[in-house]
Image (tube, rainbow, N blue to C red; front, side, top):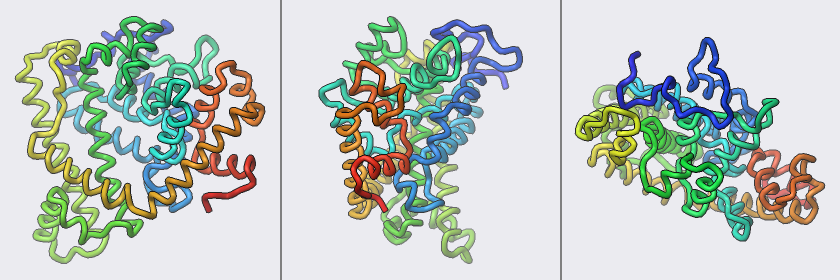
Length: 376
């Protein structure tokens, strides 16, 4: 497929922090994707929480399955817009590499623990993973990804951390947060594909868990519209087939909406290069109508799933595990793996060590260090 003029062309990449010869059979973005897939941090995602903890069921989404779903949606949209599918896939597969065990509860707890030491941001941690923490190559730390992949991985960043990044890498991935400019269209697309994916699969997991019902979801316009369509065309549908068909139609409608709205925005901007698209402001987006319905769905999930009493109780226990692990390792760093224990910047080393844990390893470590089991 011939890329659009406003797409990121691997032949015109801003390159890697450590120069390397290009691969003979792969573009630089394909090479980024392959390095991510083979990384240790990527494999760990299979045992990291999305909403439901890993031990709560075999069929709930994990960070790994979520990342694969984001990559699939992202590639489908990128193909229609003639953006770089390989770059979108690389960003999608890497965007959660820095997530802690126990999902957002673990992140919040670790941020509290690091409040006096620069805080903790999972997007910045994903960048740390690919820039520093992976140890696979003889000549450099990290995965040495292209600028465009690293730019997309760093979805959010506080101004203080952006200033630190800019000081270490002038004109690098931290600059746009200081200038309040946009990343590539491929990075913008991954951000929206992430939202589409987690809204859809959290509905599925929420119903599977019994915490939300199809009857409750009928309050949500975006869901009810496509449930009604599915039953009108297939009146015999029952049970989970109703749910799956509704989600399938909802996903398709959102994908087509993004393609149409983004194509119109790009055309209106007149952007003819990737940098011109960055300078034109946010271009990858829903239509106004779809954005309103998506926002309503997110509000429903926040009230009825993410803040459900059962979920909150489990998350409180998960936060306690992370806080007590942090205190234990800070007091006795020899309890960590040697590479982390030997580092001079102890609080950040502890945060890196905990952030890299899977749910079950964190729970086992907590039980080993405290003698108490908080998560059955």
